Length: 253
Image 1 (tube, helix red, strand yellow):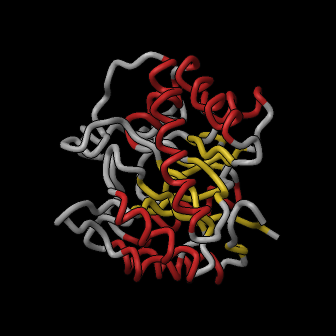
Image 2 (cartoon, rainbow, N blue to C red):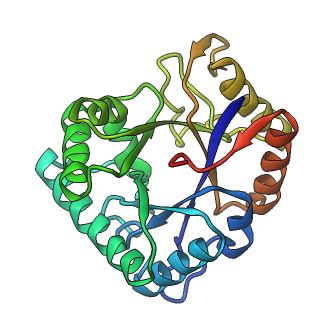
């Protein structure tokens, strides 16, 4: 039987600003990546999102990002591996406090935005992130771009990894995501996005933006929770995956 985890970036509201519809999306996903206050989120939002995830039986993961609130963590920054290590330790620790206080356990860590994409290609950053996770809790699962440096670093240091694919993003021939700065970075239309996911899970292939097929491993699928069609898409992709005979469950099971 085909199996896949369905993860979503959540807890990205902060202060007076509400982003996404976390409470509505949670019933359709199996893993939640909760923002830790650097690119989005705040202590109150973190606590509330952990509580919602626990009530919905959704596995919890830390979603550490670059310290760039204005850019939502999606702008590249020049940071050293030591800085990456420090900011990941800090953010995992912050979320772990809320998870423990509410009687839960943390399943995984998934870097956010630019930090994620930088670590997918930069071996030094990837190894620093993996080491930070290993030293905090070697049972945590590292989510990284399928085939990228992040999952390689996790495997090298001896932690469990999950190769991640994206439902609504287009790919380049080297397996990287098309940069958001390009107009064709996002897939328009639910059906096309879902068809891409089903093929990645069942065939281990995805068609690049240039039209060539590339091999890909789909352990977990990311859907985004901050778009106008986020809830409708979450509901639709869950239904289609299950109709296709794909078991949707958290990566830790």
